[in-house]
Length: 69
Image 1: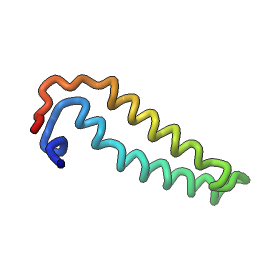
Image 2: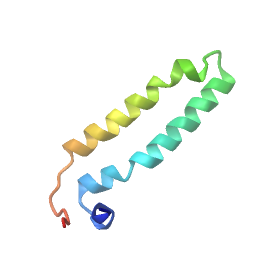
Image 3: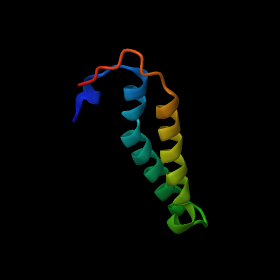
Image 4: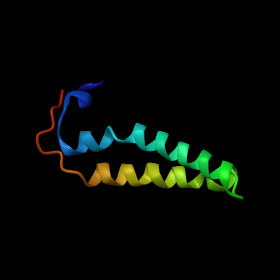
C-alpha cells in the first residue's frame, strides 16, 4: 500500500509533491483572498489546475527503477 514511499523513481518522487503543492497553493490562495479584491470563491479553480498539473507530471515521469510489490 505504501511501497511507493520507499521508491526513488521519478514517478514516485513526483507523486510525493502533491501534498506540498496543495498546501502551498492553498496558502497562496488565502493570502491573495486576504490582500486583493478577489475572494477564495473566485480563486479555488487554481487549486484544481495545480492538482491536474502534478498528476500530468506524474503520468509523464519515467517509472524506470520503480520498486513494486
